[in-house]
Image 1: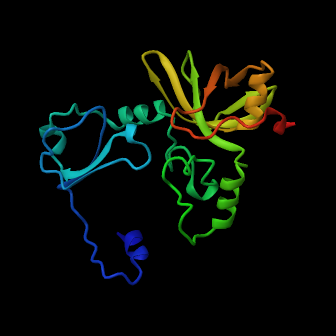
Image 2: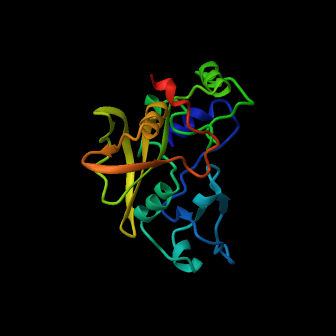
Amino acid sequence: MKRLTFYRLRAKVDLEAAGDDVCVFALWGGDLSDTNGAELMVTDPRLAALGQRVVGPADFAEGSGATVMDLEAYDAHRVALGVPEGLKDFAYSDIFPHDADMDQLGGVSFKKGCYVGQEVVSRVHHRGTARKRFIQIEAAGALPEKGTAVIANDKSVGELGSSTMIDGQAFGVALLRLDKVHQAIENGVPLTCGDVAITVKLPDWAEFGWPDAKAAE
């Protein structure tokens, strides 16, 4: 409430805490035939495959007909789609929007202004000079803890974010130098994270491609 009040500025808006009887839910993997008293239901603006966010009564999930799961299940769904999330994979003050794929996931507008850093963000976008991005990684075994370096040619090319295991396969997101990773792939150099051999993949929803491998030289 303190943070929301700060950003209200001079707008004629009254803010009031909802209380414990109203909760926020993530819903994915299907559509509900009955909204079950939901006050608001919207498709996740980052990526439709992430599902919907629902604001509704605390007993919404039990009466919705959906399978109730824990937060780890949602994180596994998100990571498998290659979507990084603030405060889990990065700190907002430590990263450029393009690093976190915000330009791909509805997190930054190039049609409005102004905001702090707008010129830098716009220049990176229109020149296509983003060198680091979160992309997907996969491994046959469990990945190490978040923050572990991804290595190519005995040098760090980035670090691991969130990871999960699905049906015995490891999936994760990692903030990587795309040019150096592409160079390693082109040269047949293995990529590792901790002691685990990994493969890398651009997310299916990504509109960016691999940069010229020579850019890493």
